[in-house]
Image 1 (cartoon, rainbow, N blue to C red):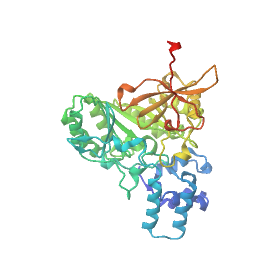
Image 2 (image 1 turned 90 degrees about the vertical axis):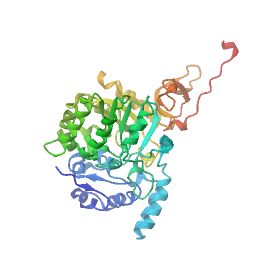
Image 3 (image 1 turned 120 degrees about the horizontal axis):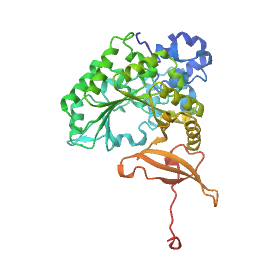
Image 4 (image 1 turned 30 degrees about the vertical axis):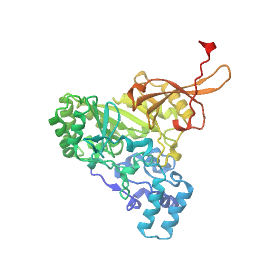
Length: 428
């Protein structure tokens, strides 16, 4: 099966567009001037219930609407389009809006390391034992998620992208940092690359013979957006990809596919189950993760169903994230208190093997902060969030629970006030 991509220039060619009111099509065009839009024939033909598109999770995951921008910003872009301003003028307006949407949340740019005094623009090293690699050829996706916190990777006219091709420099960086044990290929989506391209990176890693490299990860949405990457009967390159996975595991390197599933509907096609089986047959494991998203999966039932189904298909539930403060987060965000309620309601009813998930977790500036619970003081009724960093820039600060004052409207750790612990001499 060949992929056919839809972008803002050709999306009206989609047959199902006939079902949409003209004002909805206009919203897609206007918002896409700011937030990159991309879909493909698999998503359009197999994943979306077009008769109920307004509430369909896969439609909302791929097709933008006006509520994903601030009202004033939406009206500004709409005005520019309706006035027929030259493309460069529309782009200028769009770029001003983009830069106001916190394009690099959690101080991502501070994660760029240096090698022999020179920056590595396609690498991020935030945690002690893992580095992220952004291969230049993998900085796009089979389809774009509307919530994606890495939306700046897809904006061609702003210099916001992380990427590089020099895997030999990454290998040298690993040599100089013996505590590094994991390398994560990310993007974009590295599975957008051909197996031949990925093989060149992997062969360089093999030749480097890095004793401290124990795990390779690929972060990907391909099992949702284009499972044919792993189905040889539909894709002539799929066997090469699977053979590459097998070479990695045969080398004694642990291989983990970090799969992004946001709703159980994404796993409804038999092609997904077959792709999962083919990956697991190579010796790789598949771990699943997703942010908690209003309008898509803000329901305990959705998460419990999704986690149990993932376990039954041979995958390992890994993370439930809190939506990051970037791009259209105001449309997708869920208060921390509600997120914890959804998580606990879901995890209580899942199978034992689905309880591997770490949640709810925020990828904040200092690290991944997990909401462990909500505590109420029996003496005065005051409530607190109990939080711990499961990942921290300073690894020695991990797994040390602390309290923050409860706020039922807060959606991020920076909005919470710390609890000042006071010890009186009478208590000693």
